[in-house]
Image (cartoon, rainbow, N blue to C red; front, side, top):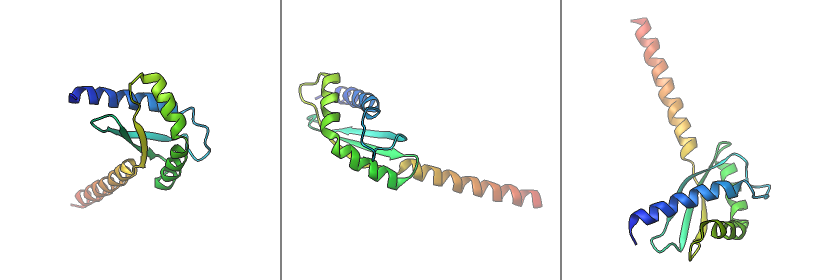
Length: 122
């Protein structure tokens, strides 16, 4: 299967999942979750969805538990909206890349402040 088709389907899945996640009523699923990345297998049988939460890693892990419980509902809605012959099985994974990005930004900011303080002394 050409890679451009997989890429297009991956983007469609990400767009549709963003809308569908707003409808999930499970209290474990945070309102502040973000879909970081979607990986679809070559035969479209599996889709791995990386989820991140602004509140932290623990909230993301709890949201993943809620999403796994609601995966049947989410998969059905995804199949209705995408009209694929075979709707991929969804696997949710907690991702900490946003949190790590904030930590890196804070470290860089503190290094910059130390550098500016040192240059002011000279």
